[in-house]
Length: 328
Ligand SMILES: Nc1ncnc2c1ncn2[C@@H]1O[C@H](COP(=O)(O)OP(=O)(O)O)[C@@H](O)[C@H]1O
Ligand SMILES: [Mg+2]
Image (cartoon, rainbow, N blue to C red; front, side, top):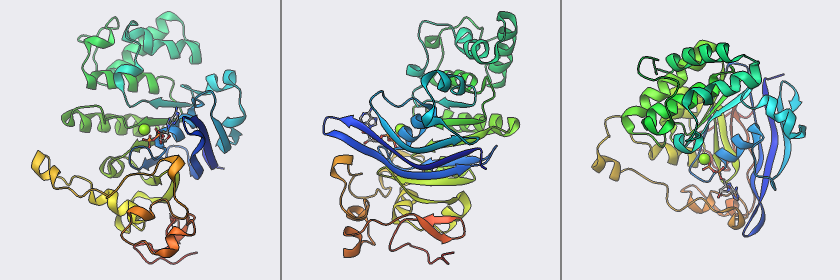
């Protein structure tokens, strides 16, 4: 049994266009201490997948399938039980460091809160552990006292505080949802390295969510590519990078800034996948990507491809994959 098993997860939400299925039949698993990436353009369902794992879907959401943590289906737990798991066994770093922190509370009290609730630490022990945590995320006490408020910190420093909060109770799984997207380019690398270092040193599992394949390559060993609420390619990060099979993955790769292209003009010339992710109410029959795909044929607009093995553990949902595999 894997530490985490997601089986046919589907999530529907009320929208102005009615109840819509925004995530459809997503499955993946993860061993203890493993490093998994979820990649896809904005609007593909990455954050909703993470929120489902955290039990933080909006009230009226309907989730089907299973999210098993050590065999226990989190979708069947009530909010009280979920609260003992959230922050304690699965924790998450959110995309927006400012809105994820409480502006009127000190950083010290925000970090020690979880330590008191989940680990039952008293005030002194929680404070001592908080100091150690701040130090471990690169905010030493002599410059960053516990009574600072979020507005006194830079974006990168706030993200460090959020990392400290997320890892405080040593969860089995840390979900990092676009942890560097809101930060300056110069700080992005440092924060990614910090996340890598902390999870590797503690043996914590990592789910790294990003629209950027470069971030995924740097932080993960397995990857799931999502498009319009579906998993379209998965496998080891190495296999997917070296033998990318889905034209969508290929498009994400082509759109990735290569090292050395930091300047604006070079970025301007970057490839971008034509068209847009179809919204849930406007998803076409057949393959969701067909309308944007250079490999699409008439068949793609009729039948919906399913995720199936291409080569060993490398899977793809495409009728015309870019690599020939040996289905097993
Ligand atoms: N609370 C919500 N109510 C209605 N639709 C939502 C809500 N949250 C997300 N969505 C929609 O679900 C889809 C997936 O969103 P999301 O998981 O945030 O994508 P990603 O994280 O990959 O950018 C999008 O089309 C988005 O508009
Ligand atoms: Mg998101």
